[in-house]
Image (cartoon, rainbow, N blue to C red; front, side, top):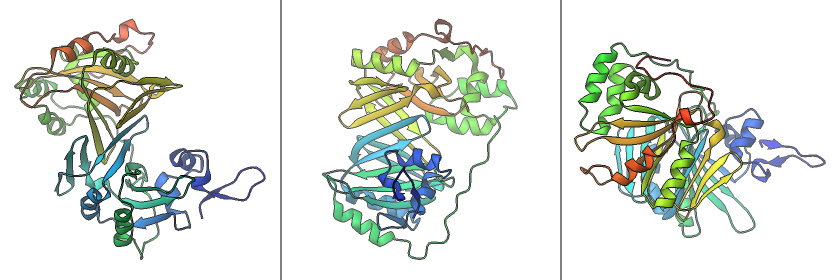
Length: 355
């Protein structure tokens, strides 16, 4: 049994800790998947990684809480899995309010977790990538179908599990674009925002590097607390937004209005019925307004990055397909201070070359 010890006590199982499993695993020098796998007891069952079949069984759970996170942001939506579209190593869940993009090559290990507590069991299906980091956790709620959880656990239990091991991902150096002018020309001719990701791959750029390549014609550096300013402004004005949080294996999207915005220590939080967002502001290194051309006019987003140049969270205004973005959203973004108005000593240039 993977355990921890407290003063004057016998070793305890991981779920008896006051710490969240992610934090406890880090303290023990483990990944979160390793923490679960080393638990010796009926509370944790490793499942066979038959990913498409597991995904297609999730609608049977009924109403659940879907949690997708990265190091600095946690995104939680209450909804039901449905309208699932799988195509090889990619997948979509389009059953509002649940809206997910699945990168299934990173769905490496899966566990069914059933932890007793005073008010009843806390059940979840938890998916991890090759490094043992959480991709998505599907938590059952009071309205969920417990029998469906039991059926998934029984059907996919890995009776012949090989020894568990994680494989940390290599640290990748920032990509360098070979022909910046060609990238800018193709970007300027873009008709659909979904063309952007394959465009980056063609030109050998990561998302953060593309901002330097585009420069001030399309990018405005914002104050580091731009996300908090955006959420407060969206709440006050009632402007509906889209909020994307992702990791290697999953991107989860909220669309709608936010109302209850609370700061708690380093966290800025949205605490609304059916949607929670928790963002570690102390892990934010940079924030940008980005304007992308489309056939419907410019599409404006706010992108927030950590010190490793990895995206934490991305915001758009809610809009209907084939319609321009709303004037209210553009006005909201335009009012967010840029870095020149913030107490921020980090002031690299955005002149089209790497700072």
